[in-house]
Figure: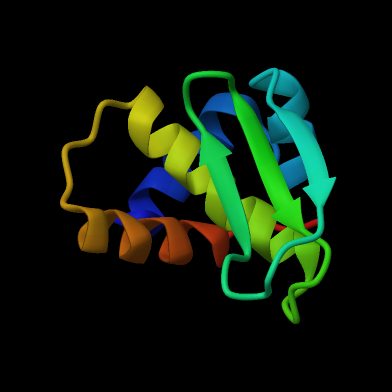
Length: 97
């Protein structure tokens, strides 16, 4: 499902750039430093993605995963929390910096 979502977004917006998708979706990106357990968070209510500068994963990968959550919610795809994490991770594999 993550691949299909990614391909649909690519077709809809004509880009595989996560930064361009954030601009198109008017998502604010914030950079913070937390305990490394949490890599990033998507705040659906305020349309904000927070990225953890202490993460050991490239920030663009975290951003791609979090914007996957955004599009899952935008497309009103109903998933369990565990399923949503899998779809967001798979989605992120199809996009670039």
